[in-house]
Amino acid sequence: MEITKVIMKSSWLRFSRNRDLRQLHDERMRRGTVNVGSCSRLFSNPT
Image 1 (cartoon, helix red, strand yellow):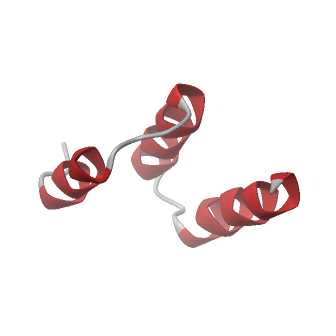
Image 2 (tube, rainbow, N blue to C red):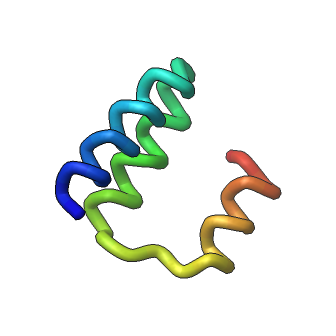
């Protein structure tokens, strides 16, 4: 589980070079679990 999380995180950081997307991801990591509705909203309306 932990290894998977690390791999997913590094893949995301490599994939999204955009600083704002990285910040969003870090916020999500800090919160722990984010519900699907929240993620959909973020991707639909990037601010």
